[in-house]
Image (tube, rainbow, N blue to C red; front, side, top):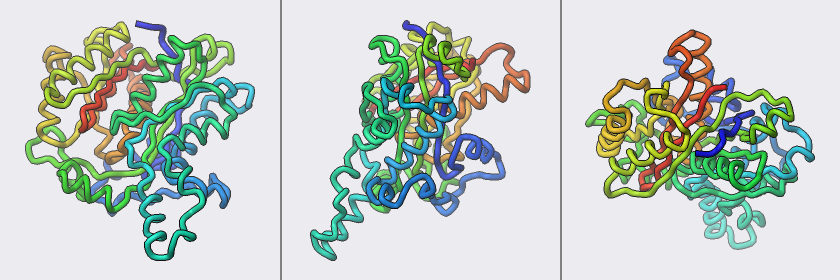
Length: 365
């Protein structure tokens, strides 16, 4: 168990909104996501000059918008503050596939001279953290975490360890998913882990199908307590514990071990957890494994859960950080409503289809 790390800012962009406040306000029953037709196109052109729009793929642009909001929210706005900052971004591995497909079509139909000169750099999976670091003049540790839906939670975990063990005082961490291509959407539907009709998404039921795939990004600013207090920052919450593992053949055991390890790392007991934001894959075999793991960890006790994926859809590598931000918002709301007493701890789970599993424990400040 290491020291807690402060959360001092957050940002997001997805079909619900271009910032946290807008997206949170749309998490109402009347705004239910029912099908692919309900997914509003993302337009972040206002944040970038024309040359940047040509040079950057959508998964990089979305990550940059989310990080800009997070840093602004944290009141970090000078090169002096961001010089030593680290950047970790989770990606699903297919974030730039639309850019790739568009240029491949240009190559086939119009010849090699029509391929974008920015193709190589724009389609690289390390482009989001690199561009965020360059924009902010950051020289700290950085990298892309490729772990499917667990990507952004693992990115936050890397940020946590960098601050706890490596002397880094400031990290921006999160995840991103670029515009969903027809190829990716069809591939997921052929595997029966996603579909275009969100009304078929009923996690923890035997007839459920996976949620609609959606684009978006999210970021949080993490700081050592000393850094946050020295700046006089508004501490929104703390990252208390994290764990990850890899196993697909015995999912229940892996999920159980990952959650227990995250709680141990946080130094809290299951009884102290106020709410769990589950993976809620919407695939019966995965959901059964998660339900059994939850029963094992919480020993049959009733713990409130909430599935934001019903409204957000599956944001791929951005789903973990998005759920983390919404969990903090939920904890703040319940505190205002004087619910749950003094309990203000959330667990967020991301269990990817390829066996990358991660759990995060956070606390409202």
